[in-house]
Image 1: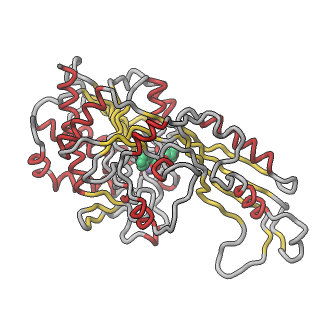
Image 2: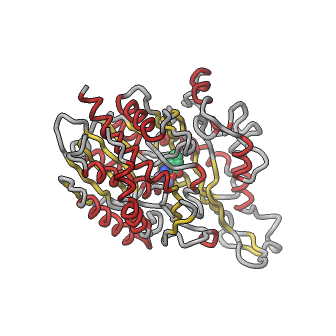
Image 3: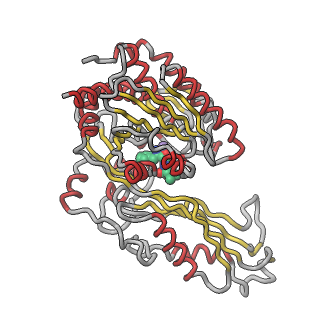
Length: 457
Ligand code: BES
Ligand code: MN
Ligand code: MN
């Protein structure tokens, strides 16, 4: 079996230069000002995929941002790996907290700094470069398909339709995704669970205009006060979400399932220290790793209203707004949860205000099996590249396509992520370790070879 390290080493400058190019595009899916940049990024990827001698490369328009698709069949008997990822990125703000420009990649201390470096451009690009390495050694071991979308960070709204309308195009033996993290560079892991999501927006309107807070204050309800009070009512003193029915469908893990997951190393002191917090906070009765993976959450993502400019302004505002998301766990349904949230807030809103609730997007939680041939191949690939078998872990983030593919295509997913929790994804100074980038390429190359071999035997 190849070891690939020498090959990767001799292409390392080229592989980094290309990643720098990829990271230079401001492919911010949330901001319509960048629509053109998002489309340009899709076409850049199209070109890079064409350079890999794919049979077919195509950019599909969607209701939102384009999907990049590619496929190559080497042998109808070989397994087909569908590689999913996203080329869109989160908005970079707050900009003043970055040490360098988010779209001018900088290499410092063996890490590459840019928005999307880890989530997910750096991890997507490892897959293209792994195929480039494999191509140098002869025909690819597996058939491959790529589905790289441009609106994962805004809820993948165009994706369900695309999947339903192109089932044949997406036919594969398994889906492979690098868009998660591992425990540490010397503790490889494979993600076997992700949370779902229900993302809501709340608008509260009180009086029909902003008022002088002295002339009217005291007699007219303040929408910001109301909103804060309502939000404070969404959790009880034990950290449990109070929306009636919220926990009804939650899958509660057995003690032995909890023990299994509890075996992954976790250091509370360094967790707290890294974040600069004095204590953790969450639902009573669960450990920190459990709270951020197998339990549902409710968090305010943003809240605004009234005067926030310089100095002071005495105003009783007409409106208040909040964006609130809930992370969901297996068996909860995002549509159902959005309904329960809406009903409850409408019910507890006082008669002094009007309330409007928008259901932005949702997705379901997913759990993947450790028994599949794909997982076994991934496990061996990690062992070969890292010298240690990977630990199965559940993570708290969401990748809605995983559940969608299980439902629509019955396809198993392997979550082979190489990021670290300390990579600052969605945050200023996002970065990705060069070790992780090159190790990822190596591990992926092993995966294709091992999977093909396992299918043959
Ligand atoms: N790559 C992340 C998800 C992730 C991060 C999973 C770390 C596991 C570990 C993805 O790009 C992401 O941010 N997803 C959104 C989904 C949402 C917009 C539906 C999320 O989790 O907030
Ligand atoms: Mn991602
Ligand atoms: Mn993300």
